[in-house]
Length: 544
Image (tube, rainbow, N blue to C red; front, side):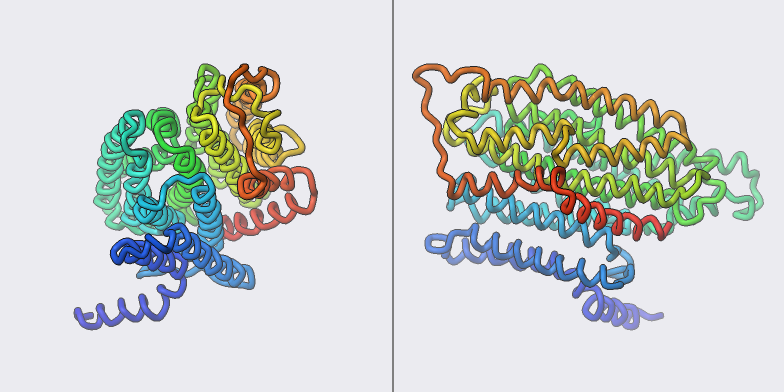
């Protein structure tokens, strides 16, 4: 095939097939161009840039919703841009989730006043650019797109963390984040080059097949024991180096060190965005990467590579959840406390991925069905986590605007002065603990059930289950410290009175916190969400 034929095929695939499925991302790209033009021609004097960002985000969300509806009507998995991206139920659902979160975050910034109109075009350009990177992450089918998606997410995040100009704490946090992120990017890129060099491809759908071929006696006439040991160790090393980049985005121990400083230095609005959106995208990417290592028919690879993969993820999950909860005890700043809470919840959600990997490789009855159940628990957890964590950070932002402090001790008596915010914070924190009847209870219950199922394939998963249960009990104490300050500790005399109007602050708090209650208390909502999560999970697992 000559160059002209290759170019013609590429154009036909891009214009005639791929761009239509890429429409939500294109809508965000058009919005970014619109934001830059508004600044260029000085229209931002009359047209607030948040309207441009909000309309663009809602348009992208509407397009993603149409795509998800079409997929549920019988759409098939397709590969876009010559196989760089995969268009399937799993990816479309996560794109929809990310765009919903983007709309809610933009609405929060409008109400809280960060950024102001002068910095609005820059801030929303970064916010939308990071979201495009996350949408690439959830649809990645190539190691190069994996790297590109993570970096497109990370680079705007560095700037947003330090967006509050003139604040030493914010600048310091952004600098630390940049340094750590640059180092991790180098490690991850080295892992990708090793894997591509050993397997001869960057296509994630071919990784397991190429690894199986490398380890098979038919590959060549060399001694299998000598050849396979060297190749196996190199590929395993490459997998670990790539996993470092994903673990960094998930703030898993020991790659969590950026998270508390970044959250404390960043505005609460940015911290809320990073705590949910980057976690959702990174978990979707982790699931794809782990399943790519297993492949549809791993054969002897289970014996060589994957026997302890799920257990290894379980160990990291248990350590991460334990560290996050223990470190949160000594925090006096509400954003640092929520940062360590984010680390702990990343550990809980990783338990679902560990259970999925153990079950996919097992010979227990209905192994794939149970593996899909573990993935269903992860999807359910992430959806509920979107509302409970965004709700907590939104309330922190609104209180900050009133008392000019983010120290827990300064929250004394606020539950009585601002009842709606106090009740909303209680809903979010109780759901983060996993107490009934909130959505977080059912989310944790689904993950713990998957660990029980995985325990029959690998008994170590029952140990992970016990650690997860104990951590749930431990976490109650430091969450109650916040509510103790808001409701039990009296407001100091002479303190500035705090008062919020129902519109728009109260309405927004209700909008993001009521789903936390609805997904736990009213059977209709958790059933519908669980059905959708189960459908998406089964469609993905059925291909492996």
